[in-house]
View 1 (cartoon, one colour):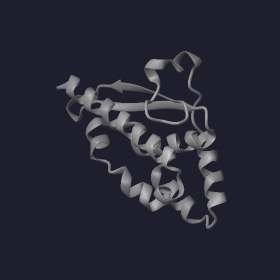
View 2 (tube, rainbow, N blue to C red):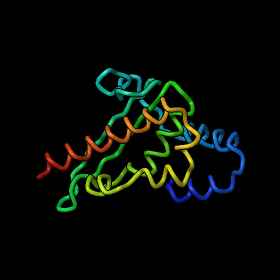
View 3 (cartoon, rainbow, N blue to C red):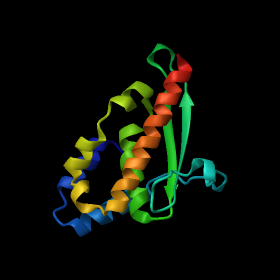
View 4 (cartoon, rainbow, N blue to C red):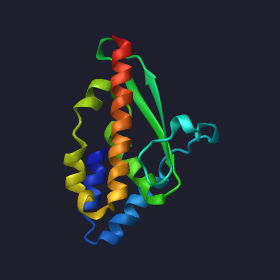
Length: 142
């Protein structure tokens, strides 16, 4: 799902209970992460819940590498947050990933005011991991 679609759907929901349910529904749309990928090397550090993230990098000529992410969490709401992040970052060129300001989107969604500090820190940790993977892929391609 595209981030614009998520933003539009979010704006139709007035109640935060409905918005939380929608985030959880987004998490249910994630492709399953194979059990073999639920390993320590794929864990995102800094998350209160367990979060696993894998990155597939494929070359794209002069445009630089394109990254595709898969992920999972043991918490339903976090799976939804992962889905939101993937709508921002997955299947994009590394340079695009590094240019995206997730703070603007999180502000539009109102996540800053409605997530616990632990969830907010976990979200930042996931963004940091995605950005590090993009930086590494870009450095390797040059």
